[in-house]
Length: 293
Image 1: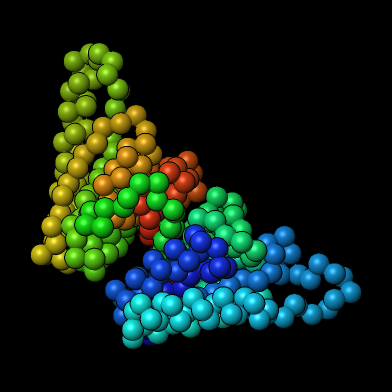
Image 2: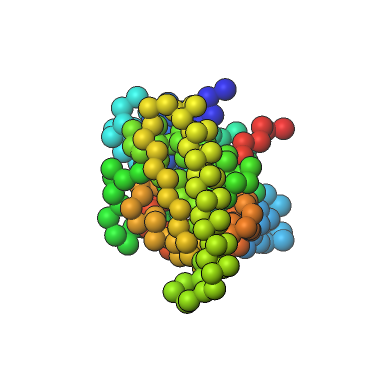
């Protein structure tokens, strides 16, 4: 089954940037691209606002024209790309979550109009990232140039979801013909002086971090022996600022759906929110694939 890359499109600038990123992802995967427009307002939750209207509103010709134009432009830029576009009667979050059941990847933009308003910062983004049945790529407008030749970075903590994120990041790096940057953030005490026993504990923590990174690198090399892999152990009081800063040198940052230690609650907690809101490059949340029922 050749699962498509799915992207929510409403004609807003950020959704068109997301569509471009989705097209590139589809080309790398030799997969079809599906442009989806959820045309019901989020407050409607898929139910007609007029209690006397027993049917759903019909798709609009204006939205279809926007979708067709976007599909034509993407097909022109990437000849041979199979692009399909359609409108779906549903709220944006529920629509993309449902589409993710049959998708290889779901791509969401930072902000939108109509059905996809508030896609990144509101409840819709949390719904998609928290409940999608495949990986989710969150695309933000860059506040600084994204290094096109930068590595694919990934945060790890030794948990199974983080290991899945490492594998996904390695696949992405191989597709993009770039390097892989493995990052582990261990706790630190800033610049304050500490007793000798604390320093010894910190040294042990560094050793554990190095072992964790070495194990992940060995796993990557078994599947991608020619991939350039860099390991980086960072000491910081909180993981989010360290990962946000590291994203500035990356072309993509991959995070697991859940973690442990410094990555506890990574998907729906403060760390993930910091990354999707302040990351300097697109953020790929490594949601596991679940087959459609």
